[in-house]
Image 1 (cartoon, rainbow, N blue to C red):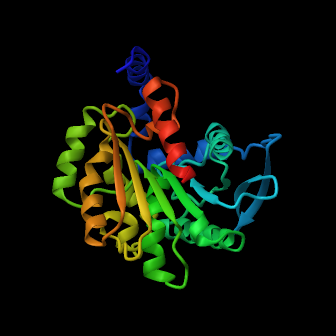
Image 2: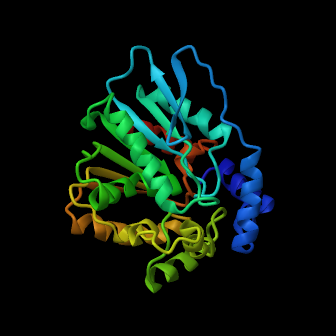
Length: 300
């Protein structure tokens, strides 16, 4: 690994990023609500891209459109543990992604589990995808999500199969470190082992996340909490990207079994020694290579 990467890991440990996801569920939710209250949708301007703010179900969606609209589009789902809204820096990175891929981008500020059960986020993401279908053919739409956004990206397939069979599937899904809860003791054992290596996401959060994502609603479907149990019938091509040194990689074998069960064309990319969602933090050589690989895969 590069010197820059080793320095970054030490710095993140010193800052205590992992501890920021600690504490009781009530303490964490209170902290995230306070942070979200000061977060704003950035007013982006770019000579190559028209950025249009619209709403779906009363929630903001940023459309990043090339001149005359591109033929292909991407639903870009920014993660945040289902409790943090997209930060301006992440949205600016989405704009960079739009420019480098040549894709039109739709970036939804989906409802969070600080205030709503996970069903609300799925409903809004699906509604955003349906809005895209009015402008682009399904074979020209891809979906990319990071962390909890990666869970929603792949989860869109299970949601369509469970509740909206009339909705056509997109062409390609990229799930980067998809944030699903642990479903059994085998996954929990692997996650605890990886917890020693992970500098960002504590294993315990993926236990607490079940409570958070229900938001007091016990009727949230099982596949929304444990996506590895979802129905992936007719699932399009899927690309998974994990860092080897992250807790969420513990669920990768379960996702592989699910993909194999439903005959899905999938690819599993694992960055040796890499951290959670490393391709979208291209600040060290290894992560910069992950960004380049992500861009090239989504161009296709």
